[in-house]
Image 1 (cartoon, helix red, strand yellow):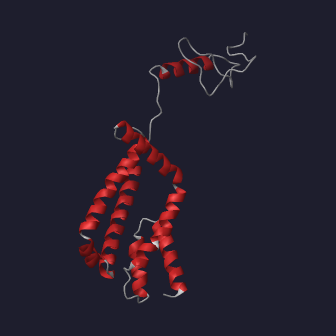
Image 2 (cartoon, rainbow, N blue to C red):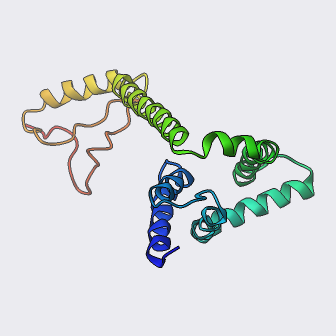
Image 3 (cartoon, rainbow, N blue to C red):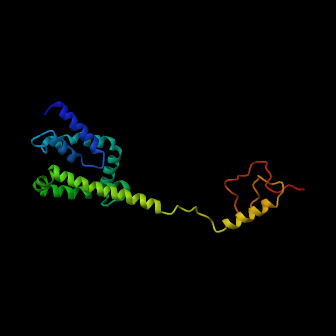
Length: 202
């Protein structure tokens, strides 16, 4: 394999690994276009170690917290006692079935899906699923009613009383009216030191 082909495949692997697409599928398609005889050989597997190392380096703090949470659960004989340990157990739960299926049906999966036609079919199907998910999320966001501001039971009464007192004060325009009995002052009109909050005497 020429050096430029290895560099090109490394770029493809690095770009597609962090996108919601299959990096292995794109490697197989690229190697098929480059007329490689065995595009599913060890090179396709080994080249992914670089992005795996990058993921471990970038998420090293999160991985350390998950491992500590898992170890604490094992020592205490608990399950998902913290958010970090819960995430770790979920990753384990999702990884074990994939490992079992891959180990038991490796030859069948390789013979069925490691070809351009199957890769194209699966890629189109998952692209349509992601498009449907995005459409549904945007539609749900548009139809969801806006959140209402929490109000206290006496907020309407207090606001009406403040309005009446403000209108009854000829020289009180622009000032914060005094709060009626049982009503707290408006947070948008704080009392200033030395200011008068009641109507001036005539």
